Length: 75
Image (cartoon, rainbow, N blue to C red; front, side, top):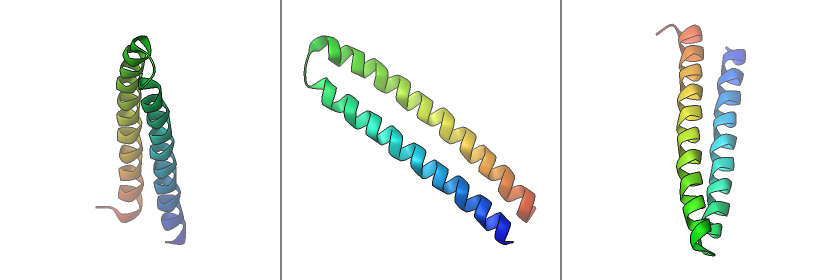
């Protein structure tokens, strides 16, 4: 049971780090918005790409976490 909890904790920590790093990237892009019109267009496009990537990674990690939970708890 301890191994299952450690696996779950590792996946949750990985998810937290990913969301935090995505937040830092979005914060840097938000700062870049203030400077020029070209940067505004570039940053808006990058924000859409980063949010899309974050959703895909979040979906994959939740799917993987669901597999771990199903493997150990057999719902």
